[in-house]
Length: 233
Image (cartoon, rainbow, N blue to C red; front, top):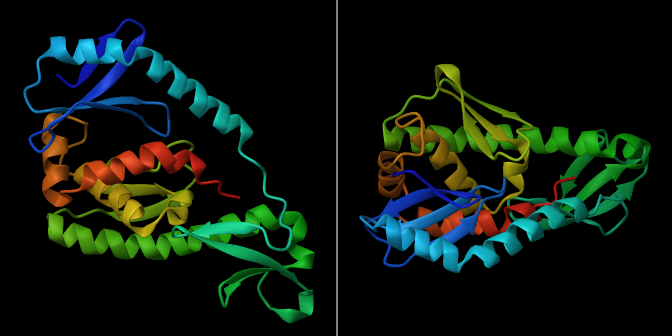
């Protein structure tokens, strides 16, 4: 069983031999997941969902509200911008002070005043370039270890998805992945590489992911709880 329908709720079931308790999480895109010890009876899963139903509705509502309320960046001096889990303050500089519109210098993002009108595009371009380099290196490293051969890496806006595995073994990542803490971004990489073996979220997928990254559940849970807080630009 990979999915469980309880009234108007549909949950993806993820079983693990390491897990001792039941847990429900809400993914970044609103997907409901119930993690369970391997072999848990469907009746017990249903009872647990019914017990937690009000909590689930509350979390779904909170997630939708937080999406609506995420503040827009103002690109003022001192504003924080994430990069691999750390927040770097912004400093606006005169056009003659640097050649590129946007740079990360001595622990501060420096944005040229003449680039202010297109600041968001400059940040996305900067993040995308760094994401391409960092994620390509991580993909090569983990692919060798996991015995897979991705055709390449592409970084783009994937909406509410962190990653995707496309035709011809191409691996895609959202540019916002580079905003996540390193160990969480590593999880996104390994998750997508497992899809080269197992296209769907079957029990075999989660078993293979667990072998490749034994603590994946903690990383996955962090992403489900905090991923929405990654503000972007």
